[in-house]
Image (cartoon, rainbow, N blue to C red; front, side):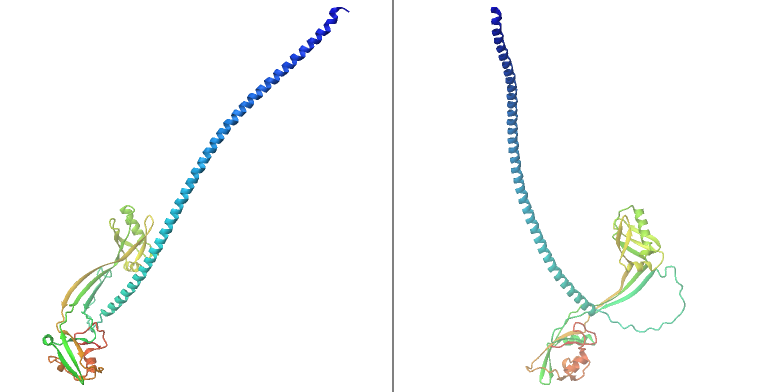
Amino acid sequence: MSDSDAVKPLVNGKMDNIDDEEQKLSVAKEELNKLTKQLEKAEDEKSRLQLAKLSAEDSKKEASKNVMVLQQQGKQRQEEFSKTVKGIQNDISMLEKGNKDLMEKLKKSQAKLQAKKSESATLQQRFKIYVQIPEKKVKFTHKVEDSDDSGQHIKGVFTIAQRPSVLLKGGQALITFEEEKVAAQILKMAKCTVSCDKDKVHVKPKSLTLDPFVKFEVHLDVSTKTLSFSNVPFTLTEERMRDRLEISFSKPSRGGGEVQRVDYDKHTGKGQITFLNSGVAERLALKRKYVVDMDREVNVKVDLVYNYKLKKFQTSRMRRTCRITWRFTSRSPVTMEGRWSASSMFPGATRSRPSSLRTWLRWRLNINKRPSSYDTSMLMFLST
């Protein structure tokens, strides 16, 4: 065995150690590279997380700011809602108060209306004219042929007579003499004293100013074929408006009839319908309203066409009437049973009939009539 062979295993052993170390070094470098890469990744992840954290903090701050803004807006909305609710409640209370006031005014107006209606009924009854139409003999001479326009108009003549009235108080009377000069003589007297058994009546004649007596005639002419209408809006052309009016008033289902002529004023919305037959206008006028087909259904007011004239207007004044007032001098209760006469009270009177005071008043004064009216041949009396 030579020296070279003996040394060689040592060298190989050393070489093997070197290879192992190099291998370990290589493995260590690889691990180092891996760790370096992991570190870089960790650093990148750290940076990303930090950025995410910053972004999250910014988002949090922004969200907090938005929450604060929303809270402020919610608070403002709540305040506005409270103010709105309060305003609505105030409006409701004002409307309720206004409604209450209107209801009170309505009740007062209804009460006034009822009073006015009662007054109107009283005045109508008061001024109602009662006329006894005298009988008149008529002699038939000949037959009159009907003209072409017969039946198209209803004509009438009405005589209106309004007598003056006056309201008397207790202890007053109106007396009308047959002659004007007698009334003038009575008015010149300051006072008169009339004895009634143990009592005395002091009478003071006074002049009286009355409204004039009015009388006139009303000549009325009513058309039986022509009907007036109003409140028709101008929504179509004038020709189409006339066609629609003619078609609407021609419908028998609504009470209409065959139309002869249509007159319409687009500026006022008024016009007239002339039917071919009489009686249609009267029938529709009783309804007061009629439905017309335009672009929509329209309720129009309808009425008869009539003309009237006032003729023979006459006025006159009552110069034979005077007012008298009296009082009793006795302090004892008045029985009004004393006897007296018209000539003893008024020397210028043309009639005298002795009687008790109450009997004479009933004979001469017509005590059953209303004290607010009088007749030219009677004396109205209002007892105390």
